[in-house]
Image (cartoon, rainbow, N blue to C red; front, side, top):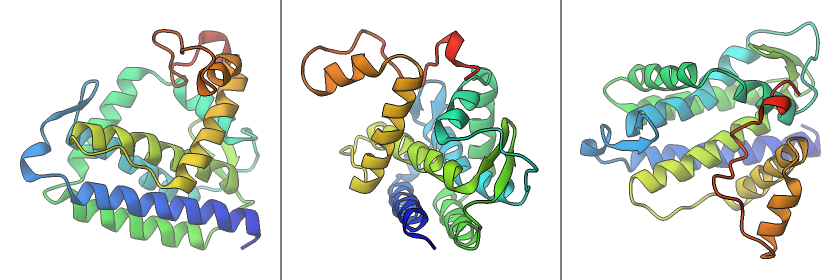
Length: 213
């Protein structure tokens, strides 16, 4: 692996392992508890597990063109999806984890890491939103694991923790997303203590004009 891709893979691997450990700590009685929006803990874990299952399925589907030139391009396209469809896929993925979700997640992690380890980082893979290179797609999965891992910890009443390298990579992607959606100045002012973020500020709530970016 080249140095840049090796780092991208290592960060994904560490974040995947951290998420699997967190899932292993979910008490048996907590799976039906509310977690995030309309999702239960099981739904949230199911949705987050798609950070692995989509990697498996997309890497098995080569693309003939690169339509999405960056992880931000992919996120903007994905965020424009219908919210109800996203919620339903989360529930379905949660049910698909079966009677032993921690074991199912651990299995997904192992299979996905093996698939990514053998992948060509410059290969283009097909997604519902267009072709994207593996090296550009994988950081979006780290981002999802980091953010939803924090949501899961909050739902379980655990301290919010994120592997430092995953936090750094996710902040970089969030900064790029803020720039593309015209909200970098607000984010920078808040991060440096100059001004609080506006009420309801959410980088994952993509404004209409940016959704086609």
